[in-house]
Image (cartoon, rainbow, N blue to C red; front, top):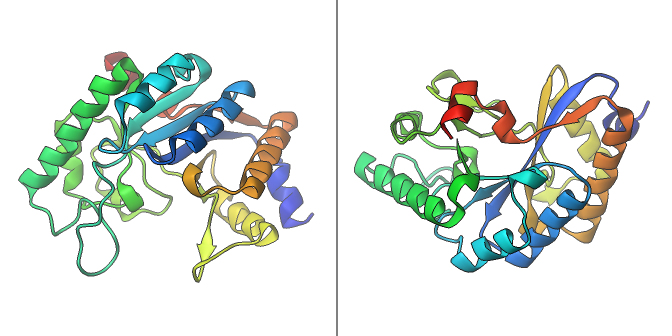
Length: 246
């Protein structure tokens, strides 16, 4: 069986969630993505950038009824999605920021999203670029977050006081700065999924091409037909106590 066939036709039971990052950027493309998921009865979660999320976007989401009733969840994605590091990898909550600065950004972003999204906001935090300092997790815990979502293999996993909801597959994976072609991508995805009972797929709607949309929905339709994939929201993966408190 080829990598494409193996990826499109999972032979073992899986749970799958979809996390779309950078809510607040390119609202029209975000709405297109959410409508497509709602039309297909598939859940999706959006990591919302607090500073980029406007009242106009929140109103559009409300007017189009793109909410939990359609399996759509929302949670916090950093604060402004800005890199504050002058060396090394990009990070919004890294060593260049003091704890008071980090605390203020996370708390202000949390309150802004609560004001805009209300009960639609889940107690999950996705740090920009899927990274932050391990110590930042104590701030998240203090502010009432129940889970953090990074990427499979993150160094945060061993030190997190929070539940982990890692994504497994970057749907727009690059190698040496170039997007993987579909056969290469399927090989990468199969390796990432090996031995996993729950698989998370990360999207960035604002950079998705027409071909990306086509491949994504062909994949999800194939997984639906297989009967081996249970689609879920990230909220479904939270500890029961966190869901009760949300």
